[in-house]
Structure formats: C-alpha cells, structure tokens
Amino acid sequence: QVQLVESGGGLVQPGGSLRLSCAASGTISNINNMGWYRQAPGKERELVATVTRSGSTNYADSLKGRFTISRDNAKNTVSLQMNSLKPEDTAVYYCNARSVSYRDYWGKGTLVTVSS
Image (tube, rainbow, N blue to C red; front, top):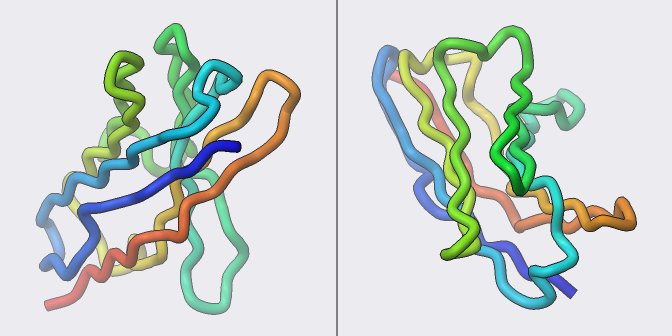
C-alpha cells in the first residue's frame, strides 16, 4: 500500500503562485510514475502533470509553461509549482502514484482557489 498526503493548497489571487507538495509513504519501491490531477466543480478529473522515477515529465498541453512538476526520490515527494494562476485553475488537486503494475493510488486532495 501507498499513502499520499498533499499540502500547500489555499486561496490565491489571479496572477499569483502556489506550490503543492505530496509526501508518499508505504511500499514506495513499487512506484513508477507520480503526478498531479485536478477536478474542478462540475467537471471530470483531469491530468495536470506526471513525472517518472527517472525524471521524465508530461504536462497537460494547456498548462505547459505555467506549471512545473518536480520529484525528489530520496524524500519520496512530488511537488507542483503553479505560476500565473487563473480563476479557471480553481479545483481540488490530487496527488497520484502509479505502481509498476499500473495500480493507482490517490491522496485526499487539496483545494486551490484562485479568486480576487
């Protein structure tokens, strides 16, 4: 089993920045990809970004250039730096870990609200 705990959400004004962090514990050795997904009110959960154990990254096309994902394998953490935030970035952000057998683990989510 893998446990994921997110932190760093909150209220930010348009144009501002936030940094989300996710700490993983448990059977970490089975984890390959880690990443972030988000779910806005009334919408389906969508990909934000993923990063492999070796550091290869993948981003949702609409977020490239504003969001940056990073991973620290030694600390078992994955982070998401979000810049130039827009009201449409408002969502619950979920940390994800995928095992080598393609099992998905999810955190409980952290709310990001972009509003003036």
